[in-house]
Image (tube, rainbow, N blue to C red; front, side):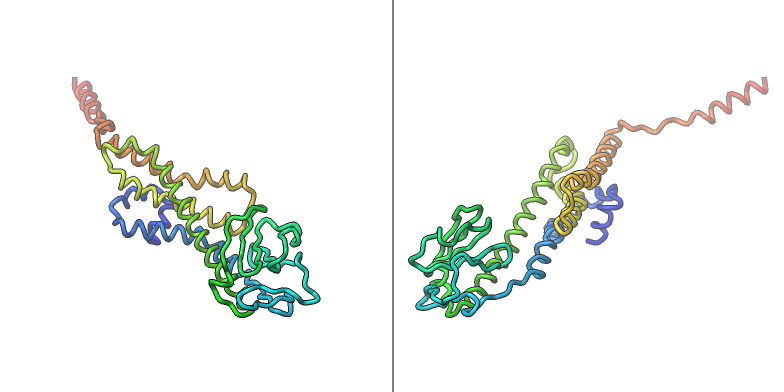
Length: 264
C-alpha cells in the first residue's frame, strides 16, 4: 500500500500498473484515504476535551428524570460549551426566549427533552433524560459529550467518504472513452489511486485551514496524477492499436548508396 501511495504522488505514471489490484485492496485503500482526510476530525475531538459541569456550576439537578434548576446563581442565558455546541439548561415551564439568542450550534435541555438547533432552527428532539436515565448533571453532560463525539466522528468520516467517491466518480468521466479497451472497474481502481494527492491535500487543508484560493490552486497540482494517468493510458491505447509505428532506419541504406557511388 505504501508503494501505491508513494507512486501516486511522486510517480503517477506507475498508477496504470496497478489496474489488476483486487477489489478488497481498493476498498482498504479508499478507507485509508478517508482516514487520512479525517485526521483533523480526530485531532479536534482529542484536543478539545470539554469541561464537564456539575450541580454546583449549573445550579441545576436531575429529579425523576427531569431537569430542575432552582439555585440562586442559575441563569437561563448561561451556556456550557461541549465541543462545537453551546448547551442551555431550562426548566420545564420556561419559554425558549428566556435563553436569549442561541448560538449557531445550540442544544437546549428542558424538562426531560433535548433539542438541537442549528442556525436557530430546531432539527431534532429526543427525550434524552428518560432514554439515558442519568442521575446527575455530571452524568448528563458526560453522556451528551460522548454522543456528540461519536456523532461528530461518524459524520466526519461519512462526509469524507462522499467527498472522495465524488472526486473519483467525477474523474472517471474523461476516461469513459477508453471503455472499449478497458473495463470501468479497472478505470475506477486506477483513479482511486490517482486520487491520493487530492486526499492528502484535503488532510492538510483541514488541519491548517489555509486560504481557500490557495487550496484551489494546489488542487490543480494535485489533479496532476489524473492528467498523467489519462495521458499514459491514451498513449498505450494508441500504441496497442498500431497508431505509433517504429520509424524505419534508412541510415544503413544511405551509407550503402554512398559506398556504391564512390566505387563507381
